[in-house]
Length: 426
Ligand code: DSN
Image 1 (spheres, rainbow, N blue to C red):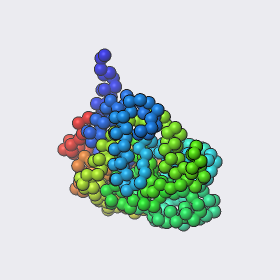
Image 2 (cartoon, rainbow, N blue to C red):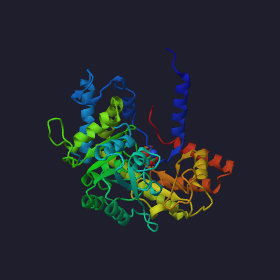
Image 3 (tube, protein in one colour):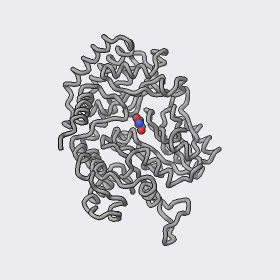
Image 4 (cartoon, rainbow, N blue to C red):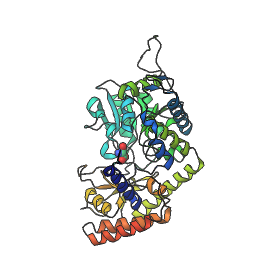
């Protein structure tokens, strides 16, 4: 058969785009060649509905080994007693938890999407907000830190079944112990979605929610630098509080409800090639070099945030404790929308995304913010020195969003800088 030139040309063009640009999307990263190889392997051919040792198909003895290794490595990485590595994505991991712990129409509490939360934590257009009844907490207007008083007040008043922590645009450490206390007080399950900072947590550079939350979900492709996918963990398994029994009349453990919620609840056959790639990535994350990488991610973000502040930019929450920076454009350029800023930066081969900022008056299509992150650029080998240069270039672009020749000269500089930073082979 002839090679599909159309698609492979597109893949090569995307490869070049990734190589020559400065990648600042906080949720993206560049996986290793081994992670990529596992993802592109013959394991994609195998159907394996069920779990290792209990499958609905023959011939699963080999993929069983890879899935078991992925589970064991993940547990070791985060100090978990139980893990499920089958969710195809973070949203599906969250969906499985919802299915396991709530009935349609039940109340749950999550961070407001426009304050940094995630679609699957209660947005009105997502399954979470359509099937269940979402309640929200905010960040405070003055500090932009999580408003734990509000979280507590809503939880006490509404008695949600589930309290969700975690965000997709929040740069600060969480008070896990306080959320757990509230959850215990109101009889809720505490789920933490650590998709964004998972790599920093694995490296021990941020506190670990697995110690506090009943259930923790994550993606595997952000700071964790694995293939695109999701996982669910528990620090400690526990008897389900809903009285659900198995066919022998015994009370089921939460792990059993969660396994059933992933498959057959929300998914069919697991992606065993992706699960093998997750195992490879977890193995990498267990190496000492991963901690060094995460330390650099954090340092780079802190230096970038300070350089932005020094140039007169406003950062939501005043800085960052992790890999993520939420630039509030209203501070330096009140008229500039995130949409226009994103477009100008992308034209200069600096990739970032527009983002709502807390108490934004613009719509999610326009926004007043830009979200920046350092995981991907740090994988390329960038150190603190480059952060100042990147901020200079961002500032030049944002001051000249309509000036094509200025943007072109920044783009040429970006391309020449990135030529010096190595990239994966695939
Ligand atoms: N879309 C992801 C992000 O960019 O943060 C969250 O799922």
